[in-house]
Image (cartoon, rainbow, N blue to C red; front, side):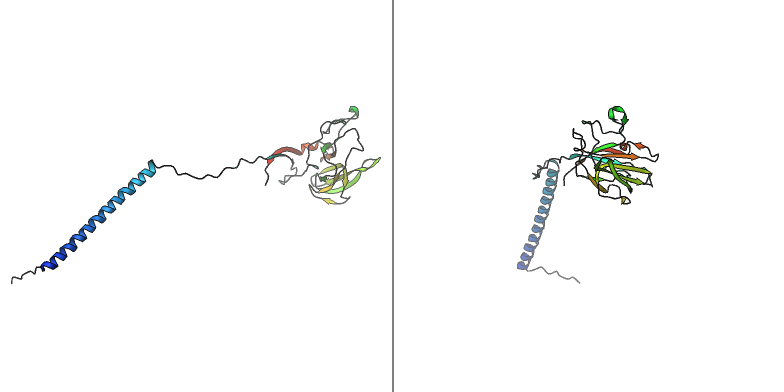
Length: 232
């Protein structure tokens, strides 16, 4: 059977056509905007990658490098192989150089060449603390000179490493029988100007005896070097 199709009424048909064209126009415009945006983005990326102007950065001023202070330090030798030093410079200062009474180095001439210096004179300021050059027991506190009760020495014996140290020209703060640690304060340096008024440099005289019980140069087990220290 033949079925007739129904044609929309003219007014409804016109409304339908108008809505259809509006929809198509909006779609075309949207597509155009999307395409234009894509081109702009690609163009922006290309420009930023190749021809963009550098950003202006606000750089903070760089402080000049700190200047350190060179400080003399002493390193004691490890003679027992435990990885720790076994000796300490008693004053932390250098050996006495030449003054009116000669040199302070081990073996320096004494009494017109009739004998040799049996220790090392480490410079000191009168009154400064003096450190134990080795650990051990205080085996003697005595007078450096029989006619001068003010100048004394402290003897320390370490039976483990078989070394003996005598530290002269100090006011002792330890007594015989005391156990002392390496670097522990054992007294204060005593001024030498009364005994040697012609200009001897104040110092601490260190005599060191090794396992063979012979006096030796203490700088053989105490090495000096300069390090740079920076302030806080």
